[in-house]
Image (tube, rainbow, N blue to C red):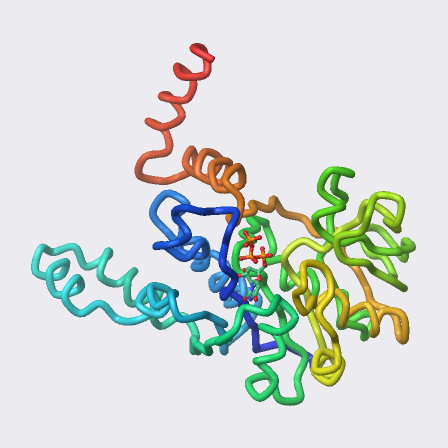
Amino acid sequence: MAEKITKAIIPAAGLGTRMLPIARAVPKEMLPIVDRPAISYLVEEAVNAGCTDILIITNRDKDAIEDYFDYSVEYEQKLRAAGKNDKADEMRRIADMANVYFLRQKETKGLGHAVARARSFVGNEPFYVLYGDDVIISEAPVCRQLCDAYLKYGRPVVGVKEVTDELIVKYCSLKAEKLEGNVYSVSDMIEKPALENKFSNLSILGRVLLTPEIFDILDNTPPGAGGEIQLTDAMRVLARRDGFVAVDFEGERFDMGAKLGFLMANVKLGVKHKETGSEFAEFLKEFVKTL
Ligand code: UTP
């Protein structure tokens, strides 16, 4: 079994219909939390968990993502000429923090289809998948939390949280039994279940650790919920056959693919921002009095 995981996939090719009309012109993964795009939080999380190689799955309208991880010579020259070396260094750091690769999905056929594009990138190693619009702020990177469980139990791992009935029908539901503390064994799962078909209110939220055996299964997975090739349907085959592990991770998740999640992320992280946080907090205190 691999002792460390160095590869991550970030599927970011979805249409983002919940974020229309802005998603028509700005990829939802590039929507800002104050001054940084959502996807930069994901790349940093993967790097902080030990990843050196990150594949971002995009589509034809998402070039802005590639540009963000490139050098920006003009900005850097201007910043250095003005003595703002720390700002220029920060831009370099973003571009240099990992080998970031890009691949187009070409057809938007679902999360499972997007992950299947990564077979040759992954080779024969375990890897992380970070869903491109799920930003998670945590003490230890969630990928690392999943890796700890993988090293202990030797099975693929999903990051989970308990969600409401209202959400479980939009996400997926897991058949799970507690192993210890915040770790569960998973024997089945279902994508977007009708309420009467849910196994539990535990749902996968944005992070999974998979092994390459998923690729043969994905290639044989027919379209499921919403007519899309669902990653959950492929993981279900593995869960039923050999079992999965689930970690109820420590961390706060923001769904940047939804209007409410985008607003909450900006308020919560806005008050912590080192340049503007305290002024923003003062503004908010006054503002809530008027609500
Ligand atoms: P979502 O279901 O949240 O993305 O997929 P979506 O389809 O863009 O959302 P809506 O419903 O239209 O608003 C989770 C992640 O999988 C990626 C998305 O970019 C997102 O980061 N994804 C989804 C792909 O890469 N390809 C797809 O075909 C679908």
